[in-house]
Length: 271
Image 1 (cartoon, helix red, strand yellow):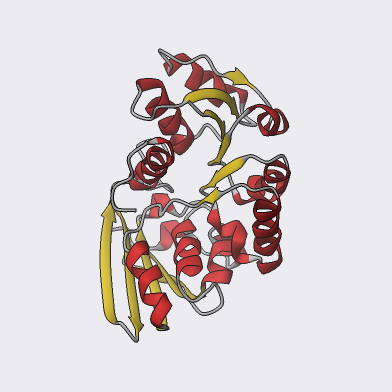
Image 2: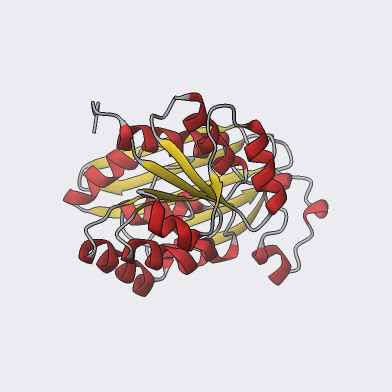
């Protein structure tokens, strides 16, 4: 039974902890960390079968077999190299950190040199398996269109920079159109799916991202359109947002749990 450490006790982190605690994922929840002690205590109160320790990421790197990051791009930049250099596997949800090619190369080298794995769940989008397959033959274009309710975009750096007041938006409005490399910086809490799609397909510089604020919807809607030598693929996902964090789709948490089950289950299906 592998020992799991969780960095970040927001919606996704708490759902992962609950999945382990309930036995849905067969593993030991060994340690949890969040800069907010209140969030850590909230998770601890919900656990019925697990007694993880409050530990730092540095301590996780010594005591856990797999460390799961579900906090922020900053947490990935700060802790991932150290954890991998200690020979520990990682699951990373804030994939936007990999828009920096030098950092991506650094993580790839650390994982290779220390014989560990880095897992990136597909998150709130579907079609990553098909995209990876299509990329082998060659891709002409990849476009991700994200449509979110106003509540799911509050606090994004791009809005502050451009002086956009979300309360002024009364109809569906295109906020951003550009490359994924810029999107993951402008909307770090909203478009981790764009990072995942970029890594599966043609990269951060060539993947086109459109972000739409839509006051007429309550779900997070993601559309993926791909053209390549394989043909044409188009996919639309309508996700329920997290009940406690509208910036996060519920499916993102489920994807992380599914990936963890794949890592820990002795029988692998469809992989």
